[in-house]
Image (cartoon, rainbow, N blue to C red):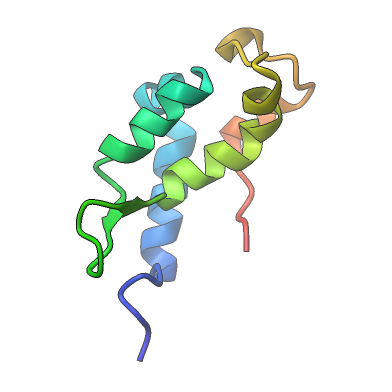
Length: 99
């Protein structure tokens, strides 16, 4: 029996589609690291852990953009539509599924 923390494939796919299309989420993800941490804390998609209700785990939507933009967060250079990553716009349109 799968744990509550395991995402169902259909749900994960829906979250990935949402991440690719939702402009509001995209804007959130392209801000600097402190705002990202704030987003993770407030993210409506995030799951609350049963053991520690005040903590949340990063949802699938956040995780996709965190992976795509982790270089930008580390260097502080991500600027949304002016993103310096060569294929970033294409990646955002068709986010890969991370295992």
